[in-house]
Image (tube, helix red, strand yellow):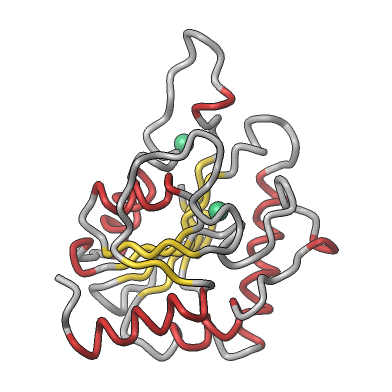
Length: 202
Ligand SMILES: [Mg+2]
Ligand SMILES: [Zn+2]
């Protein structure tokens, strides 16, 4: 589901998909309170670099806290808007926020069925690709969990695992092979930039 913007503004055929918690901002266990919003060191620098590239910048985030009743959709929206405004203040940009408000596998009770948008499923990437008319095979995905990487892999994105947040070591980690690894979002952004310069990513 798209939280923002109300209507997609299509500019580029390629995207960089960004996980949110643990990749852009510190994952303070279901972060949703504005006063606790904290950016990961260097993440802002990474956002500034990404904003110079011919890519849509799209956040894709599992937000199970909504289904769990920890916070509301409105609280998530406000948190996203705050991230966006702080990123913009420092020369960056986020073109869209997609989210999954449903339960992730680990929270499901027997008999519950899993939605199609919770990463590692690629539902959010497919929805964004449809709405922004993206070429997923020429797009990038940056995230801190193996479930992020798995979602990107399954639709042919170039995947970059960052060592911030869970750093690929979450509970129930999946056997994935990210195309690249980076210490943080800044390094990941440099990798994306050099891939685009060399056209060496497809
Ligand atoms: Mg994350
Ligand atoms: Zn979902």
